[in-house]
Structure formats: structure tokens, C-alpha cells
Length: 273
Image 1: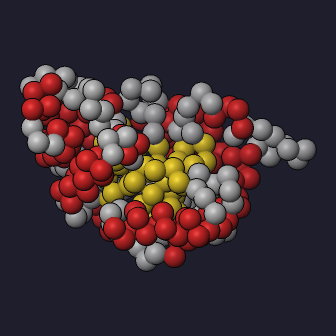
Image 2: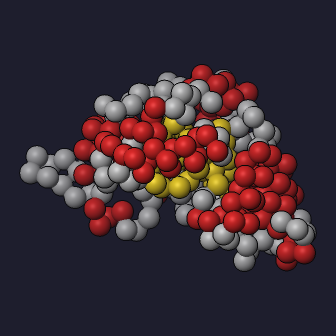
Image 3: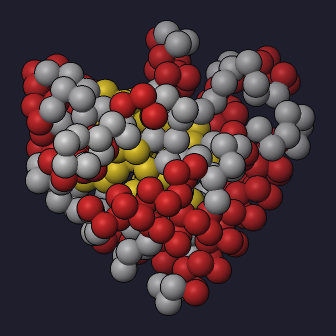
């Protein structure tokens, strides 16, 4: 999916919601465990319940890898089930030397046919550029994350007062363009989102941390907005596990609709729709 397609879908759905498919086999409703593929059956129900309210889906690859070959099968079936007009993100956080990155890129962009993959930038340019060689595919670089451990490295400051995450932004922005490069920017660090936006004014942000982690949608829009919206806000647990009973899909739909309605108000206020 290219940038224009993504923007069109945001306008059509009046939403910039990304549903994170962090499907934990230990948390899905117990009645699904009797089915042939519990993970896929859960994902299928979630997708059916939320597809009218979101523009993207983001499976977290760890939740599938840990199940071995069966997990990869569930992931492939899930990806094939997601409607074609939805932006798909492999939350894989890969990042290795060039030749290895090339094969990771083939895995996620050719075999699985995701639109985007998350990448850790620590190993530098040759760990990222192989992913940028694929037409209409995206790299989403970890820039400023919402976890507690982000403070260990990302806010380290050099002699000139530049933080490490700022340097990551400035350097990686030279390798791609706003048409194939996004950034992960955590919602729980709202004011810093403004700093990120100043460094990369035209790029999309994938923003985790709204919902179960307590990030504010209003703050994200206030600090991270650009002329093309420029935001994909992810919600995972707050939607997936809104209920652990037989009504899990209904409750997931209600939560997704609630978030979408808040996003629609923002899009109207910003004059985007």
C-alpha cells in the first residue's frame, strides 16, 4: 500500500486506528481452544468486529513465533484474511547486517506480503536499506518508544545537547522518504512527540501506548499531527481483551468504535475530512 492509498483509507474510515493483533494464546476466550486454530479464529472474529473502524492491523510476530510452525500458519491465515484496503504491519523489530536483512525483507514483504515491518536501527544503514528496496513497502524505525527501558539509551545526550533518538531521526530520514519510511513514537511521551515531529515533519508515526498503557489520543494529535494526518495510533490489549467471554468480539467492536469516534472528531477539528 502506498502513501496515497493510506491517506485515502484514513479519510474514508474517519480513523487512524491500528489494531494490534498481539494474540496471546493464554488470554483468548477458553471456548476457542477447542477449535482447530484458536489464534486464527480469535483474530478472524476481531478483524470482522473492527474492520469498519480501523485502517491498519499490526500482528506482533513474537506471539506467533512462540507457537512454532503452527503459529506461522496462523499468522499467514490471519494476514490473508485482513481486507486488502487495510495497511498491514509486521511488528517484528528486526535489524541485522545487510545480507540477513535482505532475507528478513523477503520473508515479510514477499512470502507474507506485509505492507510494513518495524526495524531496530542500532546496526545502522545496511540493516535498514535492504527493506527500502521493495516498491510500495514501508520501514517503520524504532525512534522513541513507550517502554520504561527507553530511558536507558534513547534520551542519552551528546556534547551538543542532541538526544540519541533525535540523531536516529536525522540520520535515518536520509535513507528513505516519507513515502516508505515511518517512525515508532510512543504515546506515553507526548511532549517528545512534538520534538520528533519537528525533526521529521512529513513522515507518518506509528504510535503505541494509547489505551492500556495510558497514552492520550488528544495529546498524540496535538503534538504529532501534520498536514496528511501523519499518525497511525495503535491499540492492542484494550481492544483484544475488552472481554474474555463469549462476547469478546462485540466488546472489541465497541472499544474500536469508541476510539474511532474520538479520531473522527480530531480529523474534523483539523479540517482533514
